[in-house]
Amino acid sequence: MREKLHIYHTNDLHSHFENWPKIVDYLEKQRQKHIADDEDVLLFDIGDHMDRCHPISEASFGKVNVELLNRLGYDAVTMGNNEGITLPHQELNKLYDDAAFPVIVSNLFDRFGNRPQWAQPYSIKTLKSGRSIAILGVTVPYYPIYKQLDWEVTDAFESIASMLKEVEGKADVKILLSHLGILDDQLVAERFPEIDVILGSHTHHLLENGMLKNGVLLACAEKYGHYIGHVELTFDSMTKTMVDMKASVLKTTDWKGESEETKGFLYEKKEDAQNILEEEVAVLDDPLVTNWFQTSSLPQLLADALREWCEADIGMVNAGILLQSLPKGPVMKADLHRICPHPINPIKLKLTGMEIKEIIHQASTNEMEQLQIKGLGFRGKVMGKMIYSGLNLEKLTINGANVETDLTYTLATIDMFTLGKFFPLIRTAQHIEYFMPEFLRDLLAWKLKALHRSK
Image (tube, rainbow, N blue to C red):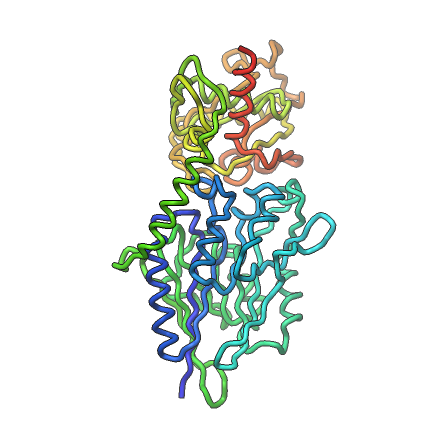
């Protein structure tokens, strides 16, 4: 006789709710089928379910995402970087207040070294078959960013090793919910062959039939709800040993059904979000224009805001960060969210005049201005023209003085440039100051309010 355990998993939805009604319909029907067949079934989310680029998640600080997970009956989740570093400390602390599932993350603590009350380092779940499952979870450790938000994140590999010791002898199957990415998942499999299954995320990779690494099955279902992952474990009912494991994915658009109840719920939440975000920020006497490939007023305003907020010598931002112009008249929070939806924060760093000149040269190339960007917090299309504040580009002066090769200057720019390979001198800078939890749209609101008050 053979017994089966079905594990379904989602990851990196990033609040792409357009796919969620299909996901709900599919998973509800699969669960019903397996229960009718007297088979065990589990459902996990591997993080980045929330993304504040969507008005619903922005207005609710991710609370609606948790409601959606509750409604579908998830057995456990781990948190991704979008939950971890795009929410203010107090909002992350409240995010899972009403969660009907355990949040498994073993490498996150507060600044005093205490584990958050909403997080568990692992969970042991006993199935109706009597089989016990150890569920572990870790998230990608963006050390300086978490520290700026008053959290402490620790090395994921050390945390996994510690948790495996904790669950040793307590479970028949060990599953890791990993928001680390495909390369680290492979390293985890090499180092910890006692793990049976690694459910992955973060790097948005698609493993259509899984990947077997050192006897560990790796699975991942890409991003945005495009796919739903399914891992099937088969056991010999007499010996209780695992005899087979396989992974597959369903392309969500191939599923014909949709949950009408979920569609109605999302419609209501969208209306709620629109009401919350209809808060007036300022009133414009003249439009503020965005042009991705020419100097224009709205990107210039953001560059000025960066320089002033961070108290830097120079402000620098790419015009492509602002997706649309602002017309004359009232500006609402919803408008700023629409034109600047990115979960991107300001940073300040020190550079020499020579380094400043090199960055200006790199930014001014046609290749850089036309560069299409995916990920790294960016939710737009292209880099666009680089816009500066405090710097006279033609004369290469700061406050009327020439940029000197050996002098040190402070540059205020965006954290996206520390994550990608756009500007190596920014990415490898030794001392970067992060300004959090403010996003760029918060700086725009601050600057617009200040201009409005001064009139």
